[in-house]
Image (cartoon, rainbow, N blue to C red):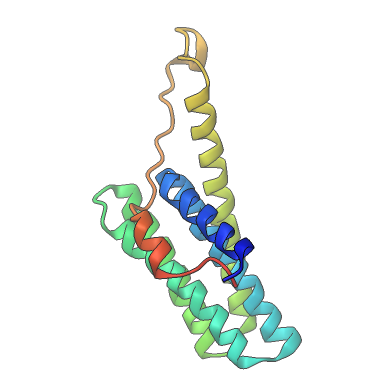
Length: 165
């Protein structure tokens, strides 16, 4: 392992172990999208089925980790998220089995939308934690948004799979 590769690995490990639950969720979604993009490129440009399979497998591994993490919570929102991620898992698996690029593209669009939603949630949480306490007139009595992410063990993520291609 080169020094640069080792430094990147240490950085990623540090980032994962210090991330909040919503940030972990965002990192997982970023990884799934990155591997999905590589899968699509291999699928359409190189026609390399083994590379396509490898990248699709990584997307499915990440989605499985998200589904399992969300399933551990009893919150109603977590159950809705579990259904959404399980749906995406099934759709991508079906597109893989049926060699259905159109279905895959639709799934990736949904995954990108989900990623943007989590990015906004992370930004709101970050702004909420850095801003001073609200005054009596600010927010007009509207409670701060509560975001519940998949309870994924950070150490498990680092040891289970790599976010690198």
